[in-house]
Image (cartoon, rainbow, N blue to C red; front, top):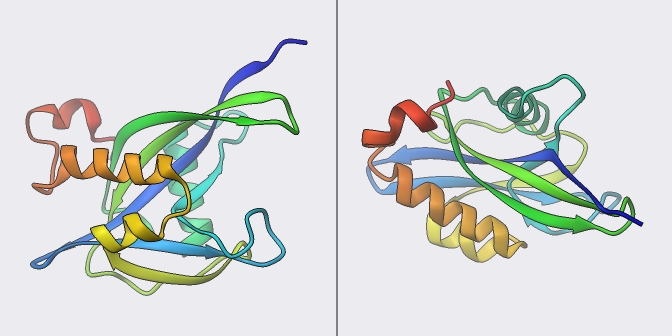
Length: 155
């Protein structure tokens, strides 16, 4: 049996920058979904014919009701799904929004919280999410990507 490698999902780290630092959005999974009760970032599948950045914007809207002011490509990470025997490559993005706006949750989540970067890192269930959040901070802590803005800014 071969195992397919698919860039099939996106992670979107939602950030509201402020005078006291980043506020990072964390979402708690509903009881009737995968990983019930776990806290995560926006996460979802890339649909057929969809680019990763389009999937990121769509998932952000579906899961939170938000639209990014700016969207950055941050990194990728992989994980194995035993049910489909696939290695999934997740394309991770950082979406900047203004003033920690009100979140409208989709069906997959029951609660949201705007947290400091450190508190979000502690609360997120997956080590890969903590790693991606650290990468986003390293690249974007000044509010933009500086000399690599032309490569990382998607919208």
